[in-house]
Length: 317
Length: 259
Ligand SMILES: Cc1cc2nc3c(=O)[nH]c(=O)nc-3n(C[C@H](O)[C@H](O)[C@H](O)COP(=O)(O)OP(=O)(O)OC[C@H]3O[C@@H](n4cnc5c(N)ncnc54)[C@H](O)[C@@H]3O)c2cc1C
Ligand SMILES: Nc1ncnc2c1ncn2[C@@H]1O[C@H](COP(=O)(O)O)[C@@H](O)[C@H]1O
Image 1 (cartoon, each protein chain N blue to C red):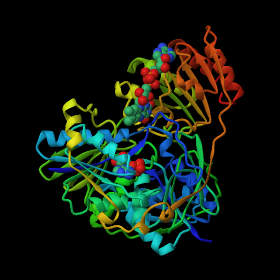
Image 2: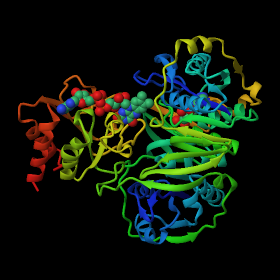
Image 3: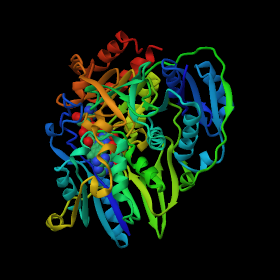
Image 4: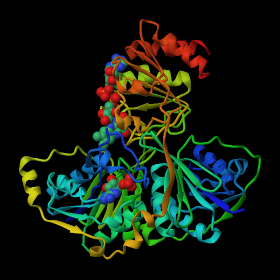
């Protein structure tokens, strides 16, 4: 059975959920092999094996800290030429898409982005135009390079163990052309990761202030164990950090439940949340387009409805 | 400083987008055509850089005949010249072909900076800038929400999941910008008039030294097998809050097993 390479997304060895989802998807196509670049492979090995990876290719070194995107591409180019995999699956993050694009150029293969499913014969399903159209497509030249959205498939624990294979990396000229001189982190919240969360509670201009996010939106999110999201109006106003923006130019989320509070539902916002399985809306304007997406909507003031809801959810615990 | 900004003509974000039944390509006639919103930030960034020093901004677009309008529109923000790659053989080109055409058109022109939007609102792939950087062998300085040029050095803030990376390279380089970088200007009357007379090169595939067999729908690296409209979502329940809004949401969340 041909190998299927899965690029693992992780933060210092703590493997992101999307990586485990991609291993489950790879198992439907061929034999899943994880590709782990950067520091922390030791901590990840057991988890990856347990989720179906038969082999974990490990490439570590300063290159992955010093340069962006290209060192990862160099590793994948090498593995594709050595292993002739049936496909390469990559998380649909900003970095992941760029890795996929450069890999496709380097190996002269087709690339498909934002797949939500990939069949055994490597046909990818995409939801395009904000989810209004379902497209099936196939790579017709070379090794299929496919980026896959988070929450597209459930991870599967197989109880297996993975075989570690170290891959040597040379730093190419293309890789060393850029140099990371500083990494700046915004504070971590302790809430679930926005792109992976099963529930997202979002706030928009209707929230009114940063104080509103702290006293109304975050408490509801915490009562539901949810991640917090925001519209661009809210991030531009400085009420919530940009990293939490949902939409065209923010994160694309596809949670089980999306709660939109004081968000009108502009096309650019919908582009990032339209494929949420269930949508609940609180907005005081009955004509707000976001109600078109609502499974359940309340026309009302979020400043009274949301705290009441938070108290009710907490009371059930 | 010579800067080239790559802009794409796309259907208006607000319009309903459709695929053509016959060949599964974007139905460009179904919606108004506009400059990809994110590319306006790229044009603005280029203009700010030359205005802070000196230089010229050229707009480059690959697309059907009508895409010339978008090149003029982008020039009217204050750019100096345009290049439009148009050829019937380009219809249905995918990202690999687009990046090949753009790279070929850019080659040998001596641009110090090539600036892109971070994503086209129709394809939404976010791959073309990285692909062009790879093809030209230039530093990839993408997803920037801050761009600083000093002499022949470039520094950007690359947005990341955790915040941002400060990344440096030398020039020439390929940059893509996100919508947090700046606020695009509206074209002034003077610049709209100037754009009408701005030099514009209209080039075919042969003009940039590419063969029709390397691009277009028939030669794409990927193919659409089929597509379908997603069944419309059943209309949900919307109630007006009369002091019971939260209670009703609570009931809904219970029936859906979220709580
Ligand atoms: C290039 C580009 C990219 C963009 N990318 C994004 C993106 O990624 N994400 C994004 O979100 N937007 C994006 N936008 C912006 C988008 O067009 C909208 O401007 C934005 O989504 C509006 O945010 P909002 O819904 O919070 O604000 P508004 O549209 O102002 O809506 C606020 C809503 O809150 C309601 N409200 C007010 N007070 C209350 C209250 N007390 N209780 C209940 N409801 C209340 C109002 O009725 C209204 O419906 C982008 C725009 C451009 C041009
Ligand atoms: N046909 C095109 N002509 C010029 N620039 C393009 C074209 N297609 C894409 N681009 C550029 O590449 C960016 C990313 O596009 P995409 O990878 O399709 O999301 C856009 O914001 C444009 O700057």
